[in-house]
Image (cartoon, rainbow, N blue to C red; front, side, top):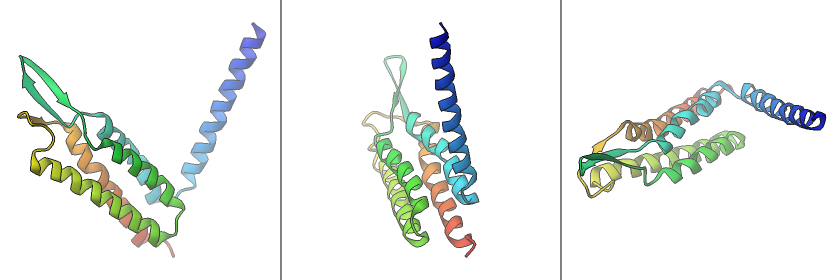
Length: 147
C-alpha cells in the first residue's frame, strides 16, 4: 500500500512540476503572445463544435467542421512561430490564418458544408473568430513590439 501511495505522490509531483514549467513559460511570453495562447481556447471550440445542423426525420443532425484539422495545425504553427524572428513569424501567421479564413468563407458561400438545407450554429462563428483573433493579435505583436 505504501508503494502505491509513493507512486501516486511521484505522479502528482511530476504533474505539478509540468504545470509549473508551463506556467513559467506562459508568464515569460510577451503580452500579445499570451493573448494568442489564450485564443487557443476559441480555436479549440471551433474544432469541436458543429458548424451547422439540419432537420430530417423529426430530429436534428449536426455537421462537423470539414476543415477543422487545418485549424489544429495552425494552432501548432502559432506556438512554433513565437520562436521565429519577428517578420518571418508574422508572415507565416498571417498567410496561414488568412488561408483558413478564406476557406471557411468559401465553404459558406459555395454551400459546401452540406447538400442538405442547413442552419449555421455557433461553432461556425468560432471558426471565423479564431483566425481573425489570431491575425489581430499577431499584427499587434508585430507592430507594437518593443524594439
